[in-house]
Image (tube, rainbow, N blue to C red; front, side, top):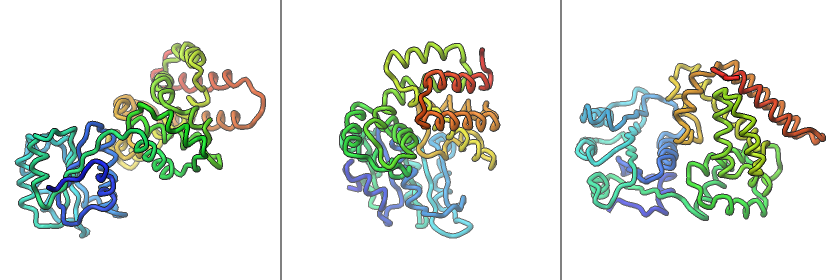
Length: 346
C-alpha cells in the first residue's frame, strides 16, 4: 500500500521517494494542503527558477482535455532537469486520466495531486494507494502540540526571535480551537510584532493572538482598506470594549499592506492579480482571498506605499517610549489611510 499515516506525511514532504512519480495530498483544510503542496514543489525543484520545469493544471482543464495531463508529464524541459506537474482540485472523476498519465510516464516528471478530504472508498485514493510508483499523503487539521510545532517552525522561517518560556506556554493557550490557516497568519503577525525584540514574550503572543488577529481585526482591516471611514469610530469603540489591542490592529494592518505591496511588485513583473497573490508566502488566508484580490487591483501602488509609510511612522512613535495619547494617534493614522483608500466614503 503506497500510503503514509498522517503523522509521517510531513516528513515525506521534505524527503520524497525518488521512485514515486505521482504524489497525492488530501485533507479537509485547503490552506494546509496548499502549504504542503508548495513545500513539496520547492523540495522537488530545489533552487531552480526554470519556468519550463513547472506546470500547473486544474481539474477543469483535465475534464475538458483528459490527455493534457499525460502531455505535460511527457514534455521535455528546455533547460533539462525533471519536471513537476501540479494538479489541483482533483476528484474521483479524474481517476482515469491520472491513471493513464501514470501508466504512460517514462520518467523525468512528478505529478503532485491535491484534493479535499477523501474517504476510504474514494476511487482516486484507492488507485494511488495501489500504485507502486505513487504515494498518498493525508493531512488532517493539526491540533495541540502538532499545531504549536508548526507555528514555532513558521516563526523560525519568518526570521522571528525565539520564544521565551512564558511565551511558549502562552502559545499553547491561544492556539486552542484555532485552525491551521488562522494559525499560519497568526505566526506571520507575531513575527512582525516581535521583529525588533531579542525574544518573543507572552505579551507579544497575547497581543496578536487569534481570534483578535483573525476575526475582530479582520473587520478593521476591511473597513480601512475599503475606505469605510464612517465605520471606524464604532469599530474602535468595540475593540476597546473587548480589551483588544489597538497596537495589535496596527501590526496586522501593516502586514496586510506589506503583502499588498509585495504582490504588486509581482504584478509589475507582468503577473496578473491572482497569480501574484498566489506567490505570497504564507498564502493568503482562503476566507479573505476575494477581498485581497479586489484591493490588489484597486489600490494604486503609490497609495500603498503612502499607507506603509504612515504605519511605519506610527510604529516608530508607539515604540518611542514617550507618554502619548495612544488611541488618538492610532485612530488618526488609520482614519487617514482609510480616507485615501480607493472609493473611500467619508
